Length: 157
Image 1 (tube, rainbow, N blue to C red):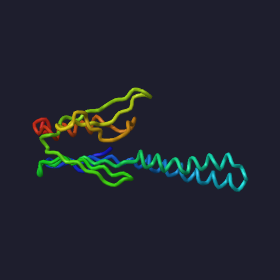
Image 2 (image 1 turned 90 degrees about the vertical axis):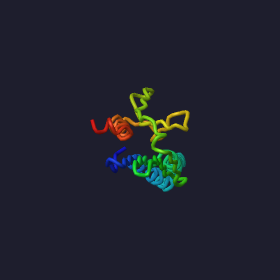
Image 3 (image 1 turned 30 degrees about the vertical axis):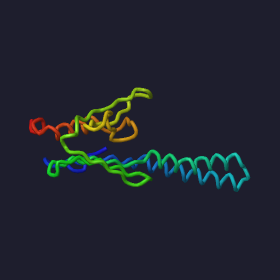
């Protein structure tokens, strides 16, 4: 997750999980290679396991790789949350005044993993910026920057 644009009137934050995408593509290619290798040796167990990888990884890719962009625009008084995945692009907009505080949600199930979430006036639950928890990056800095942008008095301090 990174800040793409940071000015007094506009803040753009994007999460594009390129590392995960490259890893899943590599696993898909490895599965295809394993299946072809098993086919050439006549080992059907290897063929089957390779096909599971070659077919399963694109499914995981489609479900897990999702680019999210949060744009806070003071000039247009608008918050835009755009998500691009295998189904296409979805976009939600709210007035800037409807945006609540951002915070870091921590999941301790498999070690400390986190994601940035934000509140919106017309949602009863917080909206996650990403669908997954991660142990990488600095989500606290992202959440703090969103909150400082929303409160100009805090931003100038």
